[in-house]
Image 1: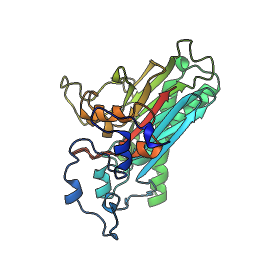
Image 2 (image 1 turned 90 degrees about the vertical axis):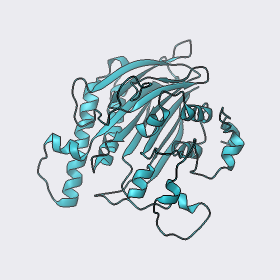
Image 3 (image 1 turned 30 degrees about the vertical axis):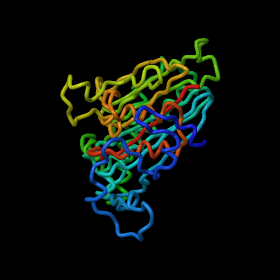
Image 4 (image 1 turned 60 degrees about the vertical axis):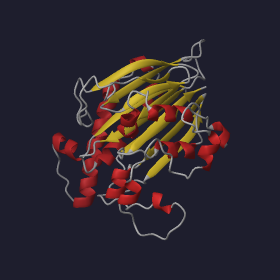
Length: 336
Protein backbone atom coordinates (compact mmCIF):
# COMPACT_ATOMS: atom_id res chain seq x y z
CA UNK A 1 0.00 0.00 0.00
CA UNK A 2 1.40 3.42 -0.95
CA UNK A 3 1.45 6.65 0.97
CA UNK A 4 -1.51 7.91 -1.07
CA UNK A 5 -3.78 5.54 0.88
CA UNK A 6 -3.23 7.56 4.08
CA UNK A 7 -5.84 10.31 3.87
CA UNK A 8 -5.20 13.92 4.82
CA UNK A 9 -6.88 15.34 7.89
CA UNK A 10 -8.07 18.45 9.62
CA UNK A 11 -4.75 18.91 11.39
CA UNK A 12 -2.75 19.00 8.18
CA UNK A 13 -1.48 15.42 8.45
CA UNK A 14 -1.58 14.43 4.81
CA UNK A 15 -0.21 11.36 3.06
CA UNK A 16 2.92 13.00 1.71
CA UNK A 17 3.87 14.60 5.02
CA UNK A 18 3.38 11.35 6.91
CA UNK A 19 5.41 9.35 4.39
CA UNK A 20 8.31 11.80 4.82
CA UNK A 21 8.19 11.82 8.61
CA UNK A 22 10.62 9.83 10.74
CA UNK A 23 9.30 6.29 11.48
CA UNK A 24 8.06 5.92 15.02
CA UNK A 25 7.69 9.67 15.66
CA UNK A 26 4.04 10.33 14.80
CA UNK A 27 3.21 13.26 17.07
CA UNK A 28 -0.04 14.84 18.17
CA UNK A 29 0.42 18.24 19.79
CA UNK A 30 3.27 18.65 22.27
CA UNK A 31 5.28 15.41 22.62
CA UNK A 32 6.77 16.63 25.91
CA UNK A 33 10.39 16.75 26.97
CA UNK A 34 10.94 13.04 27.68
CA UNK A 35 13.27 12.72 24.69
CA UNK A 36 15.79 15.06 26.36
CA UNK A 37 15.56 14.17 30.04
CA UNK A 38 15.09 10.40 30.27
CA UNK A 39 18.14 8.09 30.08
CA UNK A 40 18.86 5.74 27.20
CA UNK A 41 21.41 3.06 26.50
CA UNK A 42 24.72 4.25 25.09
CA UNK A 43 24.59 2.83 21.57
CA UNK A 44 26.42 3.91 18.39
CA UNK A 45 24.94 7.12 17.03
CA UNK A 46 22.91 6.89 13.87
CA UNK A 47 20.10 9.03 12.43
CA UNK A 48 17.15 9.10 14.85
CA UNK A 49 18.49 6.06 16.72
CA UNK A 50 17.57 7.68 20.03
CA UNK A 51 13.92 6.86 19.46
CA UNK A 52 14.59 3.14 19.68
CA UNK A 53 17.36 2.83 22.25
CA UNK A 54 15.58 1.67 25.38
CA UNK A 55 16.58 -0.79 28.12
CA UNK A 56 15.72 -4.43 27.55
CA UNK A 57 12.94 -5.38 30.01
CA UNK A 58 14.07 -7.43 33.00
CA UNK A 59 11.36 -9.62 34.54
CA UNK A 60 10.73 -13.35 35.14
CA UNK A 61 10.34 -15.15 31.84
CA UNK A 62 10.39 -11.99 29.71
CA UNK A 63 9.88 -12.62 26.04
CA UNK A 64 7.64 -9.79 24.87
CA UNK A 65 8.98 -7.56 22.11
CA UNK A 66 8.65 -3.79 22.37
CA UNK A 67 6.18 -3.56 19.45
CA UNK A 68 4.13 -6.00 17.40
CA UNK A 69 1.70 -5.30 14.57
CA UNK A 70 -0.40 -7.05 11.92
CA UNK A 71 -2.39 -6.25 8.81
CA UNK A 72 -4.73 -8.64 7.05
CA UNK A 73 -7.94 -9.20 5.09
CA UNK A 74 -10.59 -11.66 6.22
CA UNK A 75 -13.57 -11.92 3.89
CA UNK A 76 -14.63 -8.36 3.17
CA UNK A 77 -13.06 -7.03 6.38
CA UNK A 78 -9.71 -5.28 6.64
CA UNK A 79 -7.92 -5.45 9.98
CA UNK A 80 -4.98 -3.57 11.45
CA UNK A 81 -3.51 -4.29 14.86
CA UNK A 82 -0.59 -2.89 16.86
CA UNK A 83 0.67 -3.14 20.43
CA UNK A 84 3.57 -1.02 21.58
CA UNK A 85 5.35 -0.48 24.86
CA UNK A 86 4.73 2.95 26.37
CA UNK A 87 7.61 5.26 27.25
CA UNK A 88 7.01 4.65 30.96
CA UNK A 89 7.79 0.95 30.57
CA UNK A 90 10.47 1.54 27.96
CA UNK A 91 12.58 3.76 30.16
CA UNK A 92 11.90 1.67 33.25
CA UNK A 93 13.05 -1.53 31.57
CA UNK A 94 9.72 -3.27 32.23
CA UNK A 95 7.72 -5.27 29.67
CA UNK A 96 4.79 -4.22 27.54
CA UNK A 97 1.71 -5.23 29.52
CA UNK A 98 -0.79 -4.89 26.65
CA UNK A 99 -1.62 -7.56 24.11
CA UNK A 100 -4.03 -8.44 21.31
CA UNK A 101 -5.23 -11.49 19.42
CA UNK A 102 -6.84 -12.00 16.00
CA UNK A 103 -8.71 -15.18 15.06
CA UNK A 104 -10.35 -15.80 11.69
CA UNK A 105 -12.89 -18.56 11.26
CA UNK A 106 -15.43 -19.33 8.54
CA UNK A 107 -17.75 -16.36 8.33
CA UNK A 108 -16.36 -14.54 11.36
CA UNK A 109 -13.46 -12.42 12.59
CA UNK A 110 -12.79 -12.54 16.34
CA UNK A 111 -10.43 -10.00 17.90
CA UNK A 112 -9.33 -9.02 21.40
CA UNK A 113 -7.38 -6.24 23.07
CA UNK A 114 -6.11 -6.71 26.65
CA UNK A 115 -4.58 -4.24 29.09
CA UNK A 116 -2.49 -5.67 31.92
CA UNK A 117 -3.03 -3.85 35.22
CA UNK A 118 0.22 -2.02 35.89
CA UNK A 119 0.48 -2.88 39.59
CA UNK A 120 0.99 -6.56 38.81
CA UNK A 121 4.56 -7.62 38.03
CA UNK A 122 3.25 -10.43 35.78
CA UNK A 123 0.30 -8.61 34.22
CA UNK A 124 1.87 -8.99 30.78
CA UNK A 125 1.13 -12.71 31.14
CA UNK A 126 -2.47 -11.97 32.10
CA UNK A 127 -3.02 -9.80 29.02
CA UNK A 128 -1.61 -12.43 26.68
CA UNK A 129 -3.58 -15.29 28.25
CA UNK A 130 -6.88 -13.38 28.37
CA UNK A 131 -6.67 -12.17 24.77
CA UNK A 132 -5.68 -15.51 23.23
CA UNK A 133 -7.86 -17.83 25.28
CA UNK A 134 -10.98 -15.70 24.92
CA UNK A 135 -10.61 -15.46 21.14
CA UNK A 136 -10.18 -19.22 20.82
CA UNK A 137 -13.16 -19.89 23.10
CA UNK A 138 -15.41 -17.56 21.11
CA UNK A 139 -14.26 -19.05 17.81
CA UNK A 140 -14.91 -22.59 19.07
CA UNK A 141 -18.54 -21.73 19.82
CA UNK A 142 -18.96 -20.00 16.44
CA UNK A 143 -17.55 -23.05 14.62
CA UNK A 144 -20.10 -25.17 16.49
CA UNK A 145 -22.90 -23.10 14.98
CA UNK A 146 -23.68 -20.83 17.95
CA UNK A 147 -24.87 -17.37 16.86
CA UNK A 148 -23.36 -14.23 18.45
CA UNK A 149 -26.63 -13.57 20.28
CA UNK A 150 -26.47 -17.04 21.86
CA UNK A 151 -22.76 -17.15 22.75
CA UNK A 152 -22.05 -18.26 26.31
CA UNK A 153 -19.93 -15.24 27.19
CA UNK A 154 -19.58 -16.08 30.87
CA UNK A 155 -17.93 -19.41 30.03
CA UNK A 156 -15.57 -17.59 27.67
CA UNK A 157 -14.50 -15.26 30.45
CA UNK A 158 -14.13 -18.10 32.94
CA UNK A 159 -11.88 -19.94 30.48
CA UNK A 160 -9.82 -16.76 30.11
CA UNK A 161 -9.60 -16.28 33.88
CA UNK A 162 -8.39 -19.85 34.32
CA UNK A 163 -5.78 -19.27 31.62
CA UNK A 164 -4.46 -16.26 33.55
CA UNK A 165 -4.12 -18.37 36.70
CA UNK A 166 -2.32 -21.14 34.79
CA UNK A 167 0.08 -18.65 33.19
CA UNK A 168 1.04 -17.17 36.56
CA UNK A 169 1.52 -20.55 38.23
CA UNK A 170 3.59 -21.84 35.32
CA UNK A 171 5.79 -18.73 35.37
CA UNK A 172 6.40 -18.94 39.11
CA UNK A 173 7.14 -22.67 38.94
CA UNK A 174 9.64 -22.11 36.14
CA UNK A 175 11.42 -19.18 37.78
CA UNK A 176 11.31 -20.13 41.46
CA UNK A 177 10.51 -23.84 41.56
CA UNK A 178 7.39 -23.15 43.64
CA UNK A 179 4.58 -25.52 42.66
CA UNK A 180 2.05 -24.75 45.39
CA UNK A 181 -1.43 -23.45 44.62
CA UNK A 182 -1.79 -19.69 45.06
CA UNK A 183 -5.12 -18.23 46.21
CA UNK A 184 -7.00 -16.41 43.47
CA UNK A 185 -6.51 -13.08 45.21
CA UNK A 186 -2.75 -13.56 45.28
CA UNK A 187 -2.74 -14.40 41.58
CA UNK A 188 -4.76 -11.25 40.82
CA UNK A 189 -2.23 -9.12 42.68
CA UNK A 190 0.55 -10.52 40.52
CA UNK A 191 -1.29 -10.53 37.21
CA UNK A 192 -4.62 -9.16 36.02
CA UNK A 193 -5.96 -7.67 32.82
CA UNK A 194 -8.91 -5.77 31.43
CA UNK A 195 -10.01 -7.15 28.06
CA UNK A 196 -12.43 -6.47 25.21
CA UNK A 197 -13.49 -8.96 22.51
CA UNK A 198 -15.39 -8.37 19.28
CA UNK A 199 -17.06 -10.84 16.89
CA UNK A 200 -17.71 -9.43 13.41
CA UNK A 201 -19.28 -11.30 10.45
CA UNK A 202 -17.05 -11.29 7.39
CA UNK A 203 -19.85 -10.48 4.99
CA UNK A 204 -19.30 -13.60 2.88
CA UNK A 205 -22.42 -15.39 4.13
CA UNK A 206 -26.01 -14.81 5.21
CA UNK A 207 -24.92 -12.88 8.31
CA UNK A 208 -24.78 -9.64 6.31
CA UNK A 209 -28.17 -8.16 5.53
CA UNK A 210 -29.34 -6.47 2.32
CA UNK A 211 -28.56 -3.01 3.75
CA UNK A 212 -24.86 -3.96 3.95
CA UNK A 213 -24.75 -3.66 7.75
CA UNK A 214 -23.30 -6.25 10.09
CA UNK A 215 -24.59 -7.31 13.49
CA UNK A 216 -21.53 -7.71 15.72
CA UNK A 217 -20.92 -8.70 19.33
CA UNK A 218 -18.87 -6.84 21.91
CA UNK A 219 -17.77 -8.42 25.22
CA UNK A 220 -15.61 -6.63 27.78
CA UNK A 221 -14.23 -6.53 31.30
CA UNK A 222 -12.73 -3.34 32.75
CA UNK A 223 -11.67 0.01 31.31
CA UNK A 224 -10.72 -0.99 27.78
CA UNK A 225 -12.85 0.80 25.18
CA UNK A 226 -14.44 0.14 21.80
CA UNK A 227 -15.66 2.66 19.24
CA UNK A 228 -17.14 2.93 15.80
CA UNK A 229 -15.41 5.39 13.48
CA UNK A 230 -16.77 6.91 10.27
CA UNK A 231 -16.41 10.06 8.19
CA UNK A 232 -20.00 11.08 8.85
CA UNK A 233 -20.26 10.42 12.60
CA UNK A 234 -16.66 10.50 13.80
CA UNK A 235 -15.90 8.62 17.02
CA UNK A 236 -18.88 6.97 18.73
CA UNK A 237 -18.21 4.98 21.93
CA UNK A 238 -19.62 1.47 22.32
CA UNK A 239 -18.36 1.10 25.90
CA UNK A 240 -18.48 3.38 28.91
CA UNK A 241 -15.80 6.07 28.86
CA UNK A 242 -13.46 6.56 31.80
CA UNK A 243 -13.82 10.35 31.51
CA UNK A 244 -17.16 11.60 30.18
CA UNK A 245 -16.74 15.32 29.77
CA UNK A 246 -16.06 15.77 33.47
CA UNK A 247 -19.39 14.25 34.48
CA UNK A 248 -17.86 11.54 36.63
CA UNK A 249 -14.79 11.06 38.76
CA UNK A 250 -11.88 9.30 37.09
CA UNK A 251 -10.29 6.59 39.26
CA UNK A 252 -7.39 4.21 38.78
CA UNK A 253 -9.43 1.12 39.64
CA UNK A 254 -10.84 -1.31 37.08
CA UNK A 255 -12.47 -4.70 36.88
CA UNK A 256 -10.01 -7.26 35.55
CA UNK A 257 -9.49 -10.97 35.01
CA UNK A 258 -8.90 -13.39 36.72
CA UNK A 259 -11.44 -11.91 39.19
CA UNK A 260 -14.87 -12.28 37.66
CA UNK A 261 -18.03 -11.04 39.35
CA UNK A 262 -21.57 -10.88 38.01
CA UNK A 263 -21.36 -7.13 37.41
CA UNK A 264 -17.74 -6.97 36.26
CA UNK A 265 -18.39 -7.85 32.61
CA UNK A 266 -20.67 -6.57 29.86
CA UNK A 267 -21.86 -7.68 26.44
CA UNK A 268 -23.68 -5.80 23.70
CA UNK A 269 -24.76 -6.26 20.10
CA UNK A 270 -24.07 -3.37 17.76
CA UNK A 271 -24.50 -2.54 14.08
CA UNK A 272 -21.45 -1.93 11.91
CA UNK A 273 -22.28 -0.08 8.70
CA UNK A 274 -20.46 -0.57 5.41
CA UNK A 275 -18.57 2.71 5.75
CA UNK A 276 -17.55 2.27 9.39
CA UNK A 277 -14.70 0.75 11.38
CA UNK A 278 -14.85 -0.75 14.85
CA UNK A 279 -11.80 0.16 16.91
CA UNK A 280 -10.73 -1.58 20.14
CA UNK A 281 -8.12 0.11 22.34
CA UNK A 282 -6.44 0.11 25.72
CA UNK A 283 -6.47 3.23 27.87
CA UNK A 284 -2.98 4.16 26.68
CA UNK A 285 -4.81 5.49 23.63
CA UNK A 286 -8.32 5.77 25.07
CA UNK A 287 -7.37 8.21 27.84
CA UNK A 288 -5.84 10.63 25.35
CA UNK A 289 -8.77 10.17 22.97
CA UNK A 290 -11.25 11.22 25.67
CA UNK A 291 -14.68 11.51 24.08
CA UNK A 292 -13.16 11.69 20.57
CA UNK A 293 -13.80 15.39 20.05
CA UNK A 294 -10.34 16.77 20.80
CA UNK A 295 -6.99 17.02 19.06
CA UNK A 296 -6.14 13.33 19.41
CA UNK A 297 -9.52 12.26 18.06
CA UNK A 298 -9.21 14.55 15.05
CA UNK A 299 -5.66 13.43 14.27
CA UNK A 300 -6.40 9.71 14.51
CA UNK A 301 -9.64 10.04 12.55
CA UNK A 302 -7.71 11.77 9.78
CA UNK A 303 -5.30 8.83 9.34
CA UNK A 304 -7.75 6.02 10.18
CA UNK A 305 -10.56 7.02 7.83
CA UNK A 306 -9.31 4.14 5.69
CA UNK A 307 -7.00 1.25 6.68
CA UNK A 308 -3.41 2.58 6.80
CA UNK A 309 -0.40 0.57 5.69
CA UNK A 310 0.39 -1.75 8.65
CA UNK A 311 3.78 -0.17 9.47
CA UNK A 312 2.21 3.29 9.41
CA UNK A 313 -0.60 2.08 11.68
CA UNK A 314 1.94 0.88 14.25
CA UNK A 315 3.72 4.25 14.17
CA UNK A 316 0.40 6.06 14.59
CA UNK A 317 -0.54 3.94 17.61
CA UNK A 318 2.89 4.81 19.06
CA UNK A 319 2.32 8.55 18.62
CA UNK A 320 4.21 10.95 20.88
CA UNK A 321 2.18 13.18 23.21
CA UNK A 322 3.17 14.85 26.46
CA UNK A 323 2.30 12.97 29.71
CA UNK A 324 0.80 9.92 27.94
CA UNK A 325 3.37 7.19 28.59
CA UNK A 326 1.24 4.05 29.04
CA UNK A 327 1.35 1.03 26.72
CA UNK A 328 -0.72 1.42 23.54
CA UNK A 329 -2.74 -1.29 21.81
CA UNK A 330 -5.33 -0.85 19.07
CA UNK A 331 -7.20 -3.23 16.77
CA UNK A 332 -9.14 -1.61 13.93
CA UNK A 333 -11.57 -3.54 11.69
CA UNK A 334 -12.83 -1.75 8.57
CA UNK A 335 -16.02 -2.87 6.89
CA UNK A 336 -15.98 -2.90 3.09
